[in-house]
Length: 318
Image (cartoon, rainbow, N blue to C red; front, side):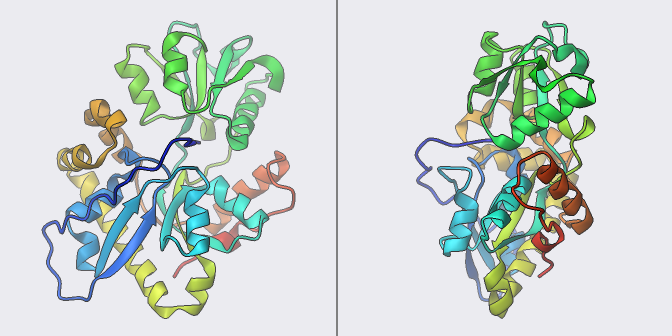
């Protein structure tokens, strides 16, 4: 899971009207991003650029955060209409009685992966024994690593763990660590390949972690209950996101062009590879309450949650 400790981007990105026209009254929607604009957001920016949101009467304004907790906090406080967050963060919010729910998947599959240098003799998770693994510092990522190690028959202490924060790729590139966890296969995995590290990746949901939605759209649970206009906005947003994602998958070159206009500078050099890699993982934004319950129980049993969660209650269909 990514973390931010830098000043927020001072921009409201991507207000292009695209190709669609509409006579529907336009509602402004502030969308708090999980991170700087990057390939994970291709469906959102395609929806803005190609007019899918505008044709549904929505003017979507993405805003970058300063911390991983910002999207949920902003939605709860009314500073954002919607946010993009991580499934584990929604469970943490429930534990703290914050009234947010997930309404759609941005990326409906796990991206978090162990990414190893190709020159360190790591071809399977069991080969991590005795190696140094750089982590992003989040509790959930640490639990993912433990699950992968146990699946490989290794004890949690079989590797040397180093907290490198968001400097995952620099730590891997410099050789300070043999592998990293907390990076995404479609972004850091691609970057490691571009850097000539010949990476070997192990997606955590294939090695002991239940399947989960990496990135989701979160909405205010209280506003969904009390505000019919808000419910309508959320329905139109999620429907437009689904259409925009389908368009991007069908037009990958055009999707790359969209993200060249919108992505933060750190991602520009790899968009030709990272955007298609992302598109190959995208699908329906629909959420599965049973899958959320399975993942929530896994978080609880892994010690990430202090009480038994209700995963189904975190999934809303406006």
